[in-house]
Length: 629
Ligand code: MSK
Image 1: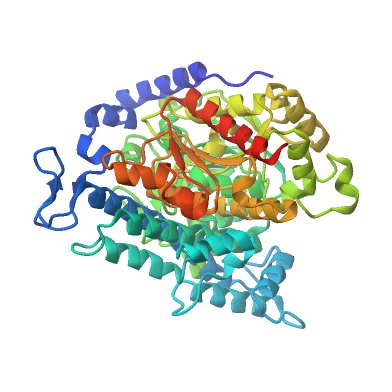
Image 2: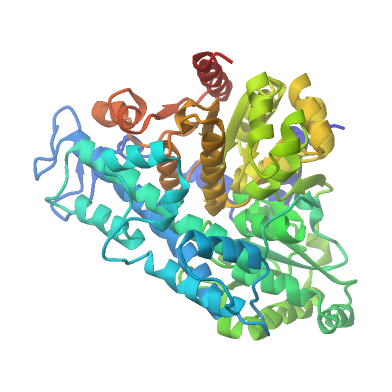
């Protein structure tokens, strides 16, 4: 097989942009030019606008803000503020899922699809399950989960999943997250004028706030999405813009929360809706996805993936998108004016993400059925408004196998080594592959794409380099879509692996890049790392495992990076975290005296993607050498 090349994808994008220019559409490519060069103060994190005495900017002539805060305090506050935004966002998504679970009932529309997982979680949390109706149990667990957001005492329930060593590190460093909302509120309190300016305190709260996301809100989002919609299992799908269908009604779901998209997918199969599509001249209804909503419905329902963050405008530019319906996060406000240049309806559905030039249909668990149907109807009726002269769907499509939850990975790798006979249900087979050197290690690659890097190039080039070196790559978020759209999630992509990983892919019948889900699903990676540590008797930081976000851009990504580091996993970034203005902050995050000393892991920042790959491989080999394997 051949991967789809960047040259081919860039040529297709250029054609789409040409259509856009004809109809007067703006594009992110143009806006990047308009915004370049970026503000150097912002890039270094040395601009403070937390009060109206400023904004203050640090220069050699003005080394302190008006309040007297030095550059390290300013950079530290900005970093913590960024983290708080990300943690709040992920955690609020998790909260919505808990509310949806609370509304689940036997007669639908939201039901419990994975009762076994619900019972497992209930037992983990000490809830009596014997003889209980599954929906009574769902409501009881959902309420307990919601209380995790504001509980007055204690720390997050999910922390007990981590190895004892990790829990002790958190306790000793005083970064165990308490109530989820409290960590965000504490962070914002600390960054307020006249509060914290001590870098060490700001970094510790950044870790704690991140942990309240990864081991709190995001874990709620992931686990209860599985309970509601099913724990992902490997499923075949397709990816890239060619998944849009010329003769069908195309509905693009975009954002993060699967509560909406699951309903759209469900009701689009309704014969009444199919008949309506046909009555309007289409052959049927095609649902496809963008960003993490796409990951959610791809890994549970096999829904095709049209693209990731920086492809969201492209789906409209095809001229074949009847409706782009969005929930929350990573949605360009540009979709409003852009959709007006075509026949596309841009539908916002959440009070959290209201945008100009959109049609707002307020979606909630109570009105899910009628509103999902209303959106599908709108799309069908809009098909006849297409302008055929503007339709251009690039013929780019890759096969992909997605849906590798932790449970699925454990299952598929069980059987690769002889030890599987008596260890079913543990990570032992994966550990055996790593110990024997058949697989050298693992990389958890996550995050967005960012115009500061040639879009998806960082992800894809790193993935190719890692698998060629027998390093298995587990991905989520837009990183996952980058792999899928070029073909790296096709099982045939094993041909790009080194001999060891190729053999594992053959025996386990897996692609070399494993799709683990959306951004909230990085919590799955934390559980997998914990299980690997427990099953091996090692600490997480000793495992030949690293994290990587080569093209990150959002506040959520900073929160993620912080909880990955705080879990003991060295993390490699291809985009600067805007702390370069402070030597003290850089040392605490990337050196030996901060997170490395407290939590056994730190960040490495390297903008040269090839060198970033070399650094990750070197760190994995260092960890192997330290273990004598
Ligand atoms: S959608 S946070 S651009 S991964 Fe989760 Fe993608 Fe990053 Fe949004």
